[in-house]
Every structure is written in structure tokens, then in C-alpha cells.
Amino acid sequence: MNPLIDAMLSHADPSQVAGLERFFKTGPGQYGEGDKFLGIKVPVTREVVKRCWREVNFTQLDECLASEFHEVRLAGLLALVACYSHARRSVKPGMTAQACVDFYLAHTDRINNWDLVDLSCYPLLGDWLLDKDRTLLYELARNGKTLWEQRIGIVSTMTFVRHGQLDDTFAIADILLHHPHDLIHKAVGWLLREAGKRDKAALEAYLKPRCSTMPRTMLRYAIEKFPEQERQAFLNYKVKL
Picture (cartoon, rainbow, N blue to C red):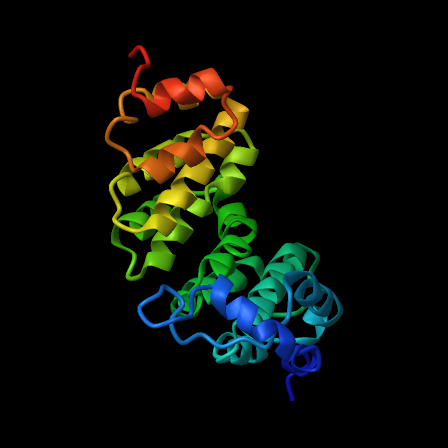
């Protein structure tokens, strides 16, 4: 018996499946090809996890991440994040913060879409590395076995950005600057934009020598919050170095 899976299955809504399949690009040749959905929206999944995370162990979380259903894998990841967040209070024996991180890194092959990455990596892996060596994220960005591992490398830096630590975001952005996939362009641009909210001058200094060669989508995401005149200057490569 797995209380998290049982609860998720009870919320299946077939009327939502087709829309989610389109949204997460599950068609032939698309990045989510073949993924299956129950038709459960994220707020519902979060409510289920809020009720059930205390009832699951690593074996049951492994079952969740092995599920063919996208939403069940997401529920498993969100439950893991909850376990990690409460680990220092010893709520669940054996589920230490280190154990949660190790479990996460051992299951990156099952984190196979952008939402699964974005909703799990920085509140867990990014948080864990906040006061530790961050070489792991550079390795994921540079040598990740999948697009999703590489995305974990950059998105995990969100936690650092929120603590005013921007250097790793800029450095990992450089590793991924010429990545071929649009989903990496969007992720890098997003994190650069977040860094710019903390220090606009630092973002401008990063972008000026690179804007003429970086992917257009990445640049647009990075400068989204700039005033229109400044945005156009970057888009037309008319910025002073």
C-alpha cells in the first residue's frame, strides 16, 4: 500500500488529460514524448502531498518516482522536498537531510520534465548546497546525462540567488550559453533575470559582451524586466561595453 499513490489516483480527472499532454509536449519527437497523465493540476497535487508526506518512506517514494504517471512522480518529488525540509526536526527517523539529497541524486533519471526539475531541485539540492561546495551543479550542467540533469544544474542556483549569491548562476550560465535546446535557453534566461532582480548592474555586465551571441530566447528571458528602451538596446546589440 502506498498512501501517496492511492490519494493521487483518487483525484484523477480524465477530462484534463488531453490538455496536459499538449502542454507538456508528449507527442512523437517532443521532449515529453510518451509521458502519461492522470489529469491532476499542481495545486491539487500539492494538497495531496501536504496531507500524505508524513506517511511515506523512501521505498514508497521510489514507487512514486517509478510511476508511469507524471503527476505521481511530481507528488513523490514534492513529498521528498517536504521530508527534506523537516529533516532537521527529526520528524521521520532515517530521513535525514543527507539521505533525502542522496535519494534525489540517485533518481534524476526519473525527473524527466521541466516542472519536475523546477519544483524540486532548488528547494532541496540548492538549499543543501547553500553552505557547501557547489562543484556538483557545474558537473550536472557540463556533463549531465540528460537535458533534465543539465537543467537541474542551473535551476538549483535559484536558492543562491535568493540569498544574494549570484556568481554560480553567472558561471553555470556560461557553461550552458550555447546549449542547443530551447528549454535550457529558457531556464538560463529565467535564472539570469532572477539574478538581475538582485543586482541589475551585475546582469548588465554579464550580458553586454555576450548578448550578440547568446540564444535569442535566453536573452529575451534575461532582460524581460528591463525598461523597453534598454531591452531594445540589448536586442539590437547597441549596448556600450
